[in-house]
Length: 189
Image (cartoon, rainbow, N blue to C red):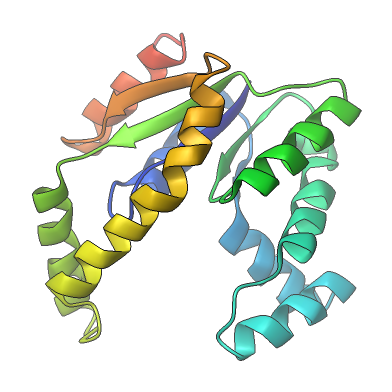
């Protein structure tokens, strides 16, 4: 099964992605993990990405796309995968389409975790306080959620037009949400 999980910051998509991937026996592929692995292994792409990361800039699409392409070409992705954090732009949607088409595959489902904004803001403010992140104020978090919504809307629309999006209520404990996600993708929990 080839899945993509999307949701705003604080929706629990990283947690859900790890649990769902393990239950389905497919790799959880996070762009953050890919970046860190390439940097720590000193790959040419990692060296290039590190320059941008060290400068506090976004890693360009070309580098990100190449890292994802390399990761999806690994043998453990043959039976499927769960992407988390990619694609982030409409251009990356096209790149992912090309990568999958080249291997004769396509996405099966796009899971969109939906959450109550006020609950997520509270969750992120608490996490910021627990981690000593004074820069994550309520105003900053609300702005990040707005930016996420603005940037993600075109991606959701693109996948929705293909009939791939399943919306899942991301509120509740981990097991409840996992159960909803599995049901939404047609897997018995």
